[in-house]
Image (cartoon, rainbow, N blue to C red; front, side, top):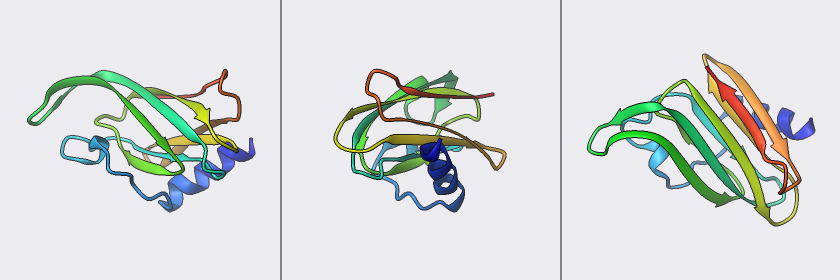
Length: 120
């Protein structure tokens, strides 16, 4: 629960610094996402969404992002389902998706139990 609260505050405040990802470019103008790993843990974020046309790329309906520590960006739509899996390191991992100013967050400290969030 503390992880979810931390991520919610992180998402609202915009404190996460974006890693260099394709989720921050043209065509990614939907819901904001923020990932946090206060202890520096590594993670994998997997998101799916209805097929969406990205300029210069064509239709996409998912992305997979690996990282450690903090990351932030945007999804191409405001409708998505994502899971975050801790892959190593110390401490919990958590993330939030923000739609219409309302964050939905989840977190985990167990690599066998991914955190999941859906927004519609």
